[in-house]
Length: 411
Image 1 (cartoon, one colour):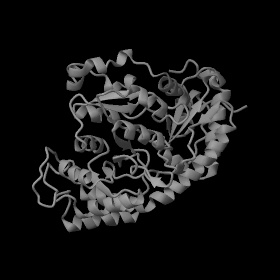
Image 2 (spheres, rainbow, N blue to C red):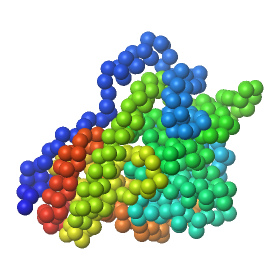
Image 3 (spheres, rainbow, N blue to C red):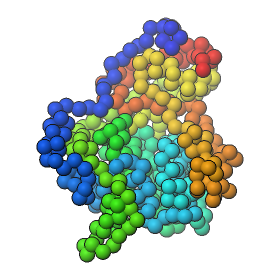
Image 4 (cartoon, rainbow, N blue to C red):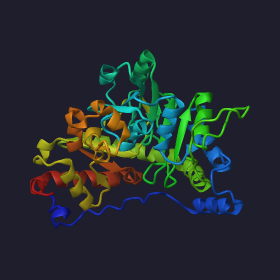
């Protein structure tokens, strides 16, 4: 029998977790070159490093155009504005995602409409999608969550049928491919985040992909204070300064050279973890559709059966794993229960005007609610190690299972 849990005074497993972000002298040299150039900011837009990074990223993800931005939230806002989505329009978002996915529509005066998730992938439920489309629906923001990709075939078919804009939220999906075509190149737009924890990072940063030349031109204008980007330099937009700096772009250029090698290591270790957990009592890892031909790997999500763990919840489970030395968490709560989205007349002009469509208290999304109590999210850097690290993780899960009764009163 495994010894007492570290959370309750036992000896931790204490694995050696790879550090993140990965960096070496190449980052240092890139930043020195920016300093010496004197070109620190993003103006004129796009600045040299930002333009090169965007072009290389677009090519890697099979997109015609890419626009480097300040972060992975404004990328979605910019895409919505470029598509002409605004006051009172409805934008469908999944029930499990980061708050930014719902905030972006509200930032342009639109209303996020929540759709439940698929119980195997935890991505937007493509079967439930069509049932919540109304005559006010203008867009869908599917999220490629964790280490998989949403059902783009089904989502794009629904979007085409109803003439809807698709903005792929690819904050977790750097390097991912669906049927051998890059994440972010299927919808009208792709939105990528380069925040510190992401698999490609400059601390903060973002990028928009698109295959439409006019959308690309409009996005460039919107993030550059509305300056015209058309050939005649005549078309202005109501934009703001959401440019990326040259320091960030230089870091991303270096990070991009490592991305696919790191992705391959993570993918292999995550596949091995899938095999181990599928043979571990009470565990069921996130399902990866075989149409995902290059698996992204931001967060490894696995579900557990509470009945096999004496009824403990995800908060108790994650706390026990963290105490053993594994970088785990409970993930994001369902959108309608998210602390960051508790709207009132005072803090949201969208809620003030459309509260009949934003009555979160009356909403119920059973799959997301269950997942929030029974999933563990593991940070991607753990999967940059070897299979021995995965073995230690499975050992920790078994240690929790055997000792789970002692966690029932932990808060």
